Amino acid sequence: MFKQKTLAALLSLAVLSGCSSIISKSEYSVAINSQPDQANFVVINRLGKTVHTGSTPASVTLKSHAGYFKGESYTIRFSKEGFASKDFTLRSTVDGWYFGNILFGGIIGMLIVDPLTGAMYNLPNDVEVDLAPSVSSRTDGHEFTVATLDSLTPEQVARLEKIN
Figure 1 (cartoon, rainbow, N blue to C red):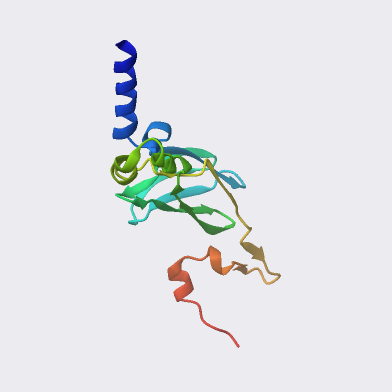
Figure 2 (cartoon, helix red, strand yellow):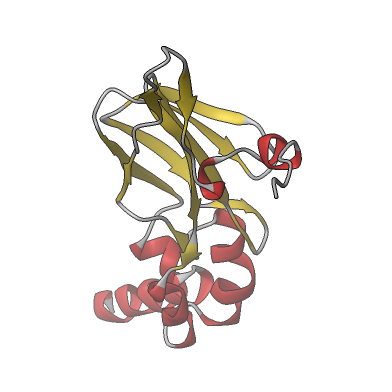
């Protein structure tokens, strides 16, 4: 009798819950590092809201989802005096355990539980960004900045002018 109740309880748990919700989580600790260390960073979510600020090295806790069936993406903006600013895009990906719903969580886990809890998505464990020196001295005493297009903000790109 005890075995039947235990088996029924386990079967109910498997049918009524999502596989990723059991195995995975919806918030992840992400280590944020830069070369060189002590760079300032700002983590901005897909809605443009700042969710963390700090200086490297650091560890932040981020949600892997932005809503029902919507993975989260973050822009991490790095800056340090004497170095070109750099943006890094951190995107969540579908967790492999989500497909375990085919065997364990069923349709409820696949279409309701895991998408609602965000457990169907995961984030990488760490971010590592190399910052390039940005300031060089000229012999006339003036300074200039060398930057690549991918290190510029959209506003800076919009102000660029072509030189012939």
